[in-house]
Image 1 (cartoon, rainbow, N blue to C red):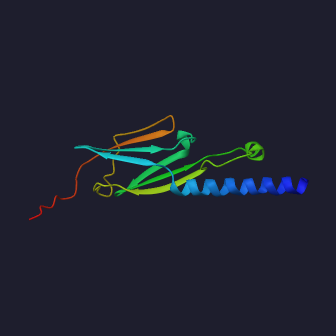
Image 2 (image 1 turned 60 degrees about the vertical axis):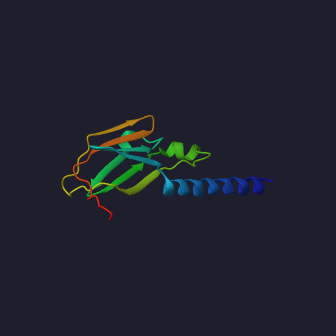
Length: 130
């Protein structure tokens, strides 16, 4: 009977690991809104401390990196761990940003939601269709 319980426990642990790996691959969900002067990006990153989130803009690529830090004690008592521990995502922004001129008006993290406000200095050319 102990063998069956051990096998079931190991199987559940493996399912948890695969679930977490899947979510680390597809997350975080992102909304991007553009208006006349500002690009607003809303990113859901629940469960992370704001000090564990690193953002960078290089040209028109936004990089999001976050990693949870678990204590050894918590790792040993964890029964289920499906939420992502690591986020590493790159997003191509829909505006032209000259390298070296990357700016952010504001970055706010509240209740697991990160909101970025990026000023728009230049958009692509409009093409007239004849």
